[in-house]
Length: 80
Image (tube, rainbow, N blue to C red; front, side):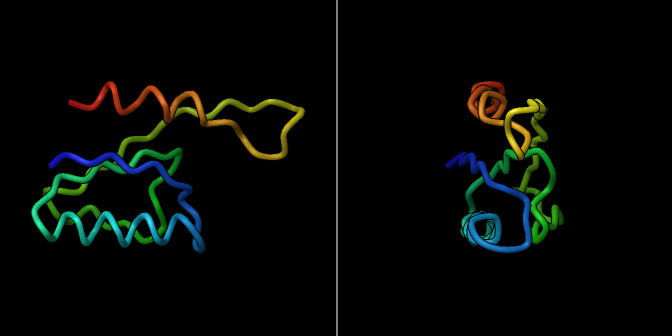
């Protein structure tokens, strides 16, 4: 199965859970694509079933953090 995982590339929380989940799925034979604005901190692209796709973030002065929502929504349609 080809699986796309969007996550934050940070040290804790959802980024770690998503990375560990993806690594385990790849070990079971699935092709896993991580979609984020930077490589997840725990991700090592040693295996042929693990892929990383960087999305562009948009900075907007109203928000504290950059917006990557639109980019992460579009990326799964570009992966084939």
